[in-house]
Amino acid sequence: MSLLEANKQVVRDFFSALGSFDLDGILKTVAENIVLTVPGTACLSGTYTLADLSGVAGLLGQACPDGITFTIKELTAEDNRVSCIVDGNGKLATGGNYTNSYHFLLKLRDGKIFETYEYMDTLKVESLFAPMLKAEKQE
Image 1 (cartoon, rainbow, N blue to C red):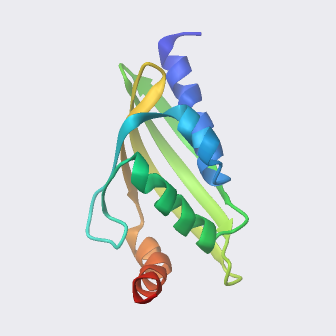
Image 2 (tube, helix red, strand yellow; image 1 turned 60 degrees about the vertical axis):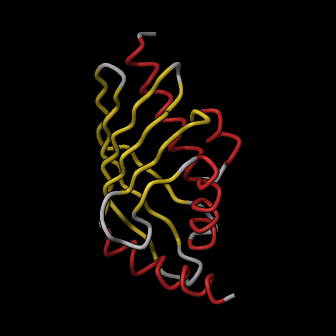
């Protein structure tokens, strides 16, 4: 398997683990010094480290306790970068449906993701997670 194909498989494995909130599976695909960046001004925008990842996964788990199905629509690899367009779908704990479209740029080294940039419909994220974060801060 070529390096580019191996990198694509790591990204597939990452989204599979992320969608089911499988922290062990996620840890197999990411470097210890990973930096995750969500550009913008939404409640989840910012830069995160591996230590932050479990908190974000916990919020996703609260919002969609049955997981999120991430469907990779396009996957392109060049050098150490994998770019992908992804659809996310899940059943909300409140009974509604969560859907979002994403573009991820992931950088890999030694078979692990060490840097990501995540672009999405931030209005959907804001409407879902801002109330959860506000409630969490009040506790």
